[in-house]
View 1 (tube, rainbow, N blue to C red):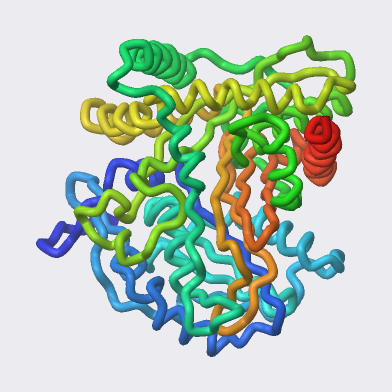
View 2: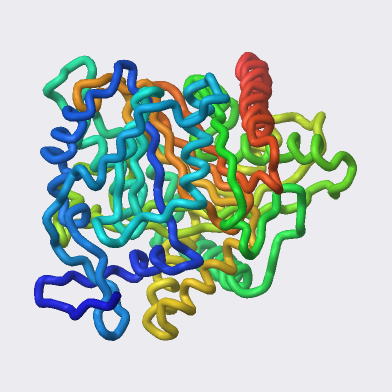
Length: 464
């Protein structure tokens, strides 16, 4: 129901409004597995005293004025309405806690929108499984904002009074984001040309250019189909070993190489000899636009004039991977991925995608902006993100955390992947439309095997 605006109401950003539209409504799910039983009362007390319980976004209702514009309105927080305690097992037929929780979250991803009669977040305490599921609407902030806030509520296992160490990217990798110099005419021309090509492709993909259909393709309405969720598990040491095989390679390069190799293996299994060599599958990848990469200090996020401020501060790049038949050198997938990622880094595609979104909202309105964003997702094959998590073990409400995973609610793509690193491990949540991809566990194994194959090849190359 529409509500009249008040002086204290705060308007939503264009990105925040986008995530509230019917076709682009997105909820972020963060799953934390605890080592000890969950203390429900202690968890509620921690929430109320943490940045989550104090942050203006988490204490505000979504309201609409007489013109249909969305605003945040401060309200009194009732933690009992936000903390959902599930005492029994969520799936009696599944003994494995991780699988049972994945089934639970997959169901939430399709059938359980957040209620607008309270601030747009929930915390589900699955006490029988020792899991905590944070459900936070994407209009409240992006992955960097939300994970940084979660980390501000946690403490180190090694020092219960100390906040977890934020993990920025290495300085050497940060320099690679801008290998050209404005003092170099060639560097500037290359940047301008790549930006023009990639932004033009971005616009065409948002309108009518589409990937060729494969066994993993989604489309209009697929976000409403039943979902399944599986987890691919990697060791960061294995990814770092692969990095060493090719100079100046990053973890993101390795991840996209894994995705390219793993998808090729999976499609070989599902549709043998049906696809031509080099078939393109386009991914939508999220890029943090803040001045500082990685997780942020919560105090800096809260400053309105900060370059690392709270909110949805990310752009989008289109990142293609290519099908190649099994038997190829696994490092070839990495080499091709690195070439493409390097070209994307030399362009301003992510920045322009963010500004183009704002411009479309201003000129055409939020409904047309939502439609264009939805078409982009329908015309591509998958969405992927990678978030750097804590380097060391942490506790939440005094309870040690053994695993952190992130996913979102369903999209029109049949495949979305979100990876988070934590204490030497990396886990990638793979959300699929199960009528299109019925075996996400096998797809996860294809990704895991791809990394192991790359590691063996990299160790041989590193010895040479």
